[in-house]
Each structure stands twice: as C-alpha cells, then as structure tokens.
Image (cartoon, rainbow, N blue to C red; front, side, top):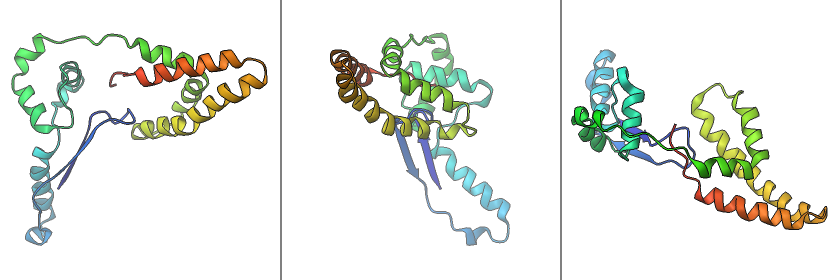
Amino acid sequence: PVGLNYSNHQHSGSKVSVNFGATINPKDHYPNFESLINAVYIALHPLVVQLPEASYEEYLELLISNKIDLTDPEKVSDFLGNKSVHLKTRLSTPPYFSNKVMKIFHLPLYWTWLINCKKIKDQAFIATWKFIIGLVGIPLWYIILLIIFPIIGLGSWGFSLAFMGIIFLVANRSGQE
C-alpha cells in the first residue's frame, strides 16, 4: 500500500508525501478478493491523513489555521486527538492582500484562468491548469511587458509593471482552499 498526502491538491507547488506500507501478498487472499480489499484498507489507514467526513471542512480549516502539516498523518492524528481543545481556539484566516495585488499585476493571466476554470470538469486538474498558465503565460507576459511595451513607447510602464509583478508573485502566499 502507498499513501499519498497533499497539503493542497488545488495549489500547484504544494507539499506531497508518499508513505509506503508493508507489502501485501495477493496470493494470501486468493480467491477471496474481499479480504484483499479489506487488508489494503487496513494497511492504508495509518499511511493517509484521516479527517472525519461529518465535519471535514471544519477540521481542514482548523488544521490549516494551526499550521499542522497536512502531509503527515501522524501529526494530524495527534492534533485531532485533542480536538475538543482545538475546536474552541479556532482561528480565522486573514484576507490575502498580496494575492489580490498579484492578480492585478498579472490581469491577462488571471482572466485566462477565469475563462478556462469553468471548463475544468475534474477538480484534480485545477493545479495542472494553473501550472500550465503560469509556465506558458508568465514568460509571455513578461516578454510583452519588457519588450513590446518599450517598442510602443511605454517602456517605463512595462518595466514598472514587470518589477512590481515579480515582487508580488514571489511574495504571494495564498491560503489553501
């Protein structure tokens, strides 16, 4: 069994942990595949982060606000073991000013994302699309700002927008969704 834990599957560049469990020999369970499925389920349990489904969003927000590593099943389990204490000390997340300003300096790329995000059917591909837009769009946007803007007589604007855009791009620490 292999447990994959993501700090945020919607945020490209987020942290991922891969945890390997003890090998399960399928021959030990043949022909009773139900016992194999059960053995895999039991073996995966300590390898992946477990959040109660009834209050999933609440626990997720609680873990994030308390800066618990979502890729470490042991740390999450230990934290949730004291859930009654932590539920009372729930923290709210502040707005992300640098994220908003970064979107302004990269407005054409943000518009591209807004237009295309509605077309994504599977939520697991959100980070992939953001990565593609950043990988292709960011270099093109800065080429436009630093090469095309001076050609049309807006060189100082292009340089200023590129400089401020890079600062807010690096400073952006948007929260997890």
